Amino acid sequence: MDFLNLAFWTFVASTAGIYAIFALGLYVQFSMAGLPNFGHVAFMAIGAYTMAILVVRYSVSLPVASMAGIAAAIVLALILGIPSLRLRADYLAIATVAGGEIVRYLAMNLPDLTGGPIGSIGLLGPGQIALYNGGWQRSLDELTTALSAVIGAAANRDLTMALMVWSIVLVLIVLFRRLERSPWGRVLKGIREDEMAVTAVGKNVFAFKLQALMLGAVLGAAAGLLLALQIGVFSPDDYQPTLTFYAYLILILGGMNRLWAIPVGAVVFSLLYAGTRFLNFFPLSLIDSGSRAFLRLFLVGFLLVLFMAVRPQGMLGNRRELLLEK
Image (tube, rainbow, N blue to C red; front, side):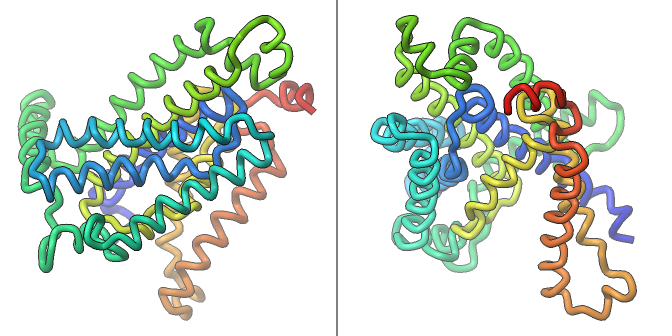
């Protein structure tokens, strides 16, 4: 039975960890600094495409290409942030949505560089679907062999990937917990609560906002790199604006201002989204698979709306804080 397929759920676990890293970038921008970024997926896309183009077209090593992908996301953050971070929150939200869509449409309409609408398959050429010339798979095989020796049992690539991703999540959570409590983190929270007050004490609000946007871009790009390595083949349609809203849902599910709740929100969201693929029992089995796919999205949305109505502060949030913010 597919529901008991361990390989599938290991894949879901890896994806949940990648979403947690992606949502952590949005946490820095929105929950800490109060920046309503609705184009966060652009950083994911630019990281993945930069890495793939450098590896495939220019034979750059995977680690160097990955660093270049993160650097490209930082440059994109500067391009978006310098003209838009002085805007009011609602205009900033519109500007970031536009930025995300510009990146996606450029990827779709530059086939000689990006592979066009078919993405990395077109980038690699006809009949080729291996993205990294075997380098990533060899590295993953070596890690899998090492893991098998440690646990004393046979491991597979999916398990290795899941453990690696969640190890990164844990390290990032610990680091950002310290960062959040640092003077820099307290300034960001001050900007979120009262920008004028922070300006009055002599802080450069624009510089702090730009730093938050750039740091979030690094995490978004890192999530994009890991997702590209996880799925192997990607296209512009994999970077729809809905991915940014998934990250917001993860923040909301766990608790908007709770750093440790991000992994919890990512797991819950991934279970909801992946679990609905098993809605193939009667009478739903009478509906064709395409219609059931839309039903999955409807059900996920309905459950999330219901959850927000019952517990708007999130699973680990504090309702009194929510009331104080109103």
